[in-house]
Amino acid sequence: MIDITLENFESDLLAASQQVPILLDIWAPWCGPCKQLGPVLEGLEAEYQGRFTLAKLNADEQQEIAGQLSEMFGVRSIPFCVMFVGGQPVDGFVGALPAEQIRGFLAKHVPTEGEVAAEAEVAQAEALAEEGQTGGAVDLLLDALEKDPNNDEARFDLIALMLAEGSDNALQHAQLVAEPLRPRATGLLVEARPAAFVRVLDAVVGVRANGRPLSTLQEAIAANKRDFAARLELASLHLALGRQTEAMDELLEIIMRDKAWNDEAARKLYVAILETMTKPQPKPAAPAPGKAGGPGAHPGAHPSAAPDGKPKLEIAGKVEVAGADPVIDAYRRKLSMALF
Image (cartoon, rainbow, N blue to C red; front, side):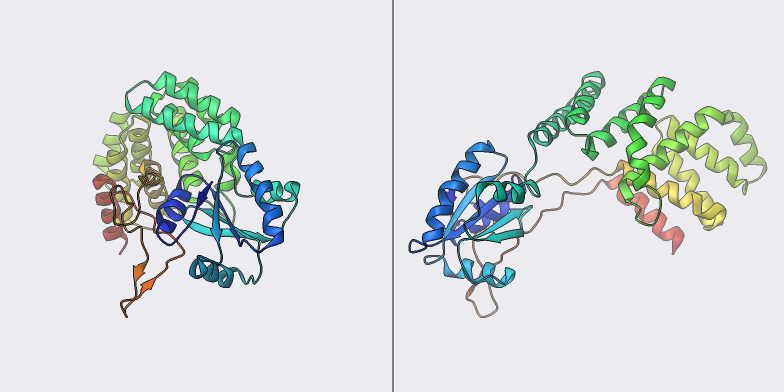
């Protein structure tokens, strides 16, 4: 449990909630229901064993923060609890609720034990994969999916590793792993990342099952530069061999000559390859302890200055964006130039 003030609001609440959900309890010494709620919240924090953090804010001493949050949620009474996730206030409740009702509230925002364990295993698996220890990575990812079948990154990483292996057995396994993604890859509400992995996997499986030899495809394209079916097949063959940039080069040739060919099949596969190559944004590193302006302070861990020079509290945190991959950036620019 931590006490929140203007000095540590950004570092200990906004930035820290990028790592773990934080429930902010807004209370006051004179408030009877607050005294009832406090021990219940403290007991739940202990029960959840680090899956969320309890923070406290004295409304009398920190009127600016309490006032802005109250205005944001349209609340005029305390105790008032606000859930912060990913640097943002996302939900709240008012009053001294019983523990069971608060558990229901927490269930919407706090990961389960299985989800926490699965996330840790995915991080370990990605580190092993970077070191070339794919067998250990696959084992961890399979275990992560068993603990949390909804962990998308475990599923994506498994498909990527199996595509890289390329054996018939690996591709069959990848198709099984991808099956829960298919409903999210079609229809009106298509999700970009699931759809990308499904499209790339289908392209590789299709060319492995029915594709022509490399030499045959090259001869067909040499005879007819507009043999788009051969170019698409060649792009899929490059994908099956782990050559993503060569695949996109072939797809780009189709796009530059006929953007709409075969219901934009070349553009869709090109975009899917870029999506599968793009790493998800990592969570920011947890801030080092320290007050604003002091040693170990989180950058910008203080109220920002308004145009009139007075401090201005920013309730929502700023999410840092990781640097982009130059190869991915270059191929995004190539696609943009070909399309526009």
